[in-house]
Amino acid sequence: MNLEVKDIPKLLLPSLKKIGRFFPFMFALIILGLYGFLILHVNQLMQVEVDDEDVEEIIRETAGLEIDRQAIEAIERLEDENIEVEAIFQEARDNPFAEAEAESDE
Image 1 (cartoon, rainbow, N blue to C red):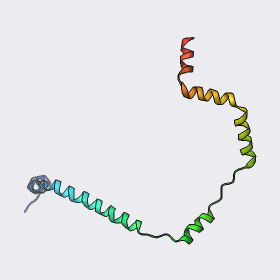
Image 2: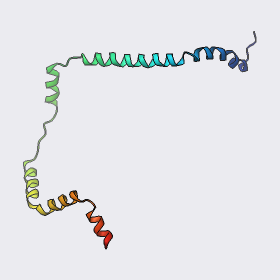
Image 3: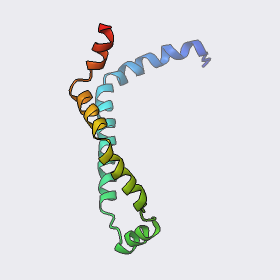
Image 4: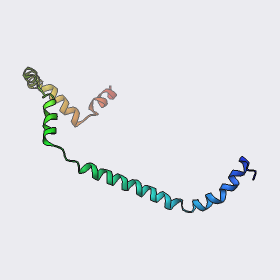
């Protein structure tokens, strides 16, 4: 039998037509299989228990957050001194387009 490359599509076309009828079914099976795999994998991961010792070790390894007391006092002082700035911010929140309107009127 002498088979040439140009004859291959003619030979495969009947087979592809038969398989093509089942494409939606095969596609649905593949998607369902993937969902099943994901569900089983997530279920396995959910069943893993973490030791309390491991959690405590990780907590010990992380550095604690240290806030400079002087920085806190400086921020509080600035908040207390800038009452007018706070009022300007509140006004801008209430009417954000007031400044743009005032500039366009000029």
